[in-house]
Image (tube, rainbow, N blue to C red; front, side, top):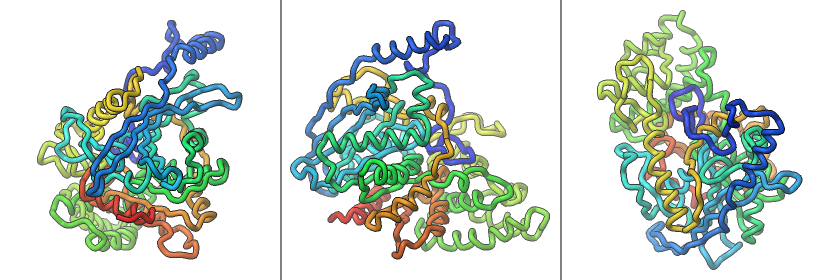
Length: 509
């Protein structure tokens, strides 16, 4: 997810200020000091941190899929070591396992996005055995952060391990800021150390022979294909399947709203239309959206490429876009039919004095600066979910499980996102193609909410259409559900997701 209507799907983060971590602290002069002082600071950082406690487990139960399920919840940390064996970081995980079957039971590793997001959103929002309310219209930061059974959890058909990358959750670095960036905050390093974390968890828990799955949301959807291929070819760990939830798969395509290319406008138009259909009471499904996609692929592109100099084409384009989005036709014509995300989110709710979320345009909050020509507030959904997820997760880890740890819990780390190096290593689509080419048994599922404008579903639709056939139909399965980026917050959509993934895993209901 991303925070405000920027031009790309940077899941979950924008550069707002937040307190410094130990690794980010300047020296007493405020200038960072010389190399010798920095080395001393790095050594001090490593030795001053109290060691994490040993893994802690607790027995719990939940009603999942209509049945009571007894399971064990475990919180612990896995060290990340450099090539000399020195611990340079510690990754905290939360695992839910059902005792009795051991390696015969599948295990799924879950990652959220950001970069800079902990795995709490998939854990306590989508597929873990407990959930806290967030992501729906009417949810408030001051609502009690109470965990309740998640009827739509996946735990009855797979064990679950939620991974918090370095700098998120309680996971932490043990080296200075420069080394932290090199070791953890590049797309390439991220895949390499997280793959080792998966390997180490499997090894420690005697699960190397289990069926292994990956699930990632948003930028986690960027991670998952690359993790799968790296695990296959570098770590010797075969992956039975992967699920990409509202994934960030093709940055160039859904990134900049370049006036020379119709693609970003096409991809955004379907999500805007879905939001409008929902407000009008039109059901969101393949039948109602098919004519929109057909128009998008054909007449929209023709009129768009004709350019504003062609008045007839631009009039036709603007009128159709206004009808599909529900926006003022005069406004849309003034924009030559090219409605950006920020304008849509403000204008569609302007009469109510509210602004919509880029993650779900029908989740709104009051606009604190309605007279301003530009949005001066953060995304309403993103700001609202920090409190419940953080409070619920910290209480679960430290109180319910009893894994006592000092330090701030980062559901979202703005520092990680700010420092991230989006390097030019292989794209997730490249690794996705290679991973499924060498394993014809791997199940691949991509899921989206219809009204998500941060990572619109139509981008995945167009991307899949360009993939090879691999000798079979439906090699990659695409499903859409009512809702936005976190469509799973809606109980019906969460239940539909559960059914589709059970099918992909070959599980029985």
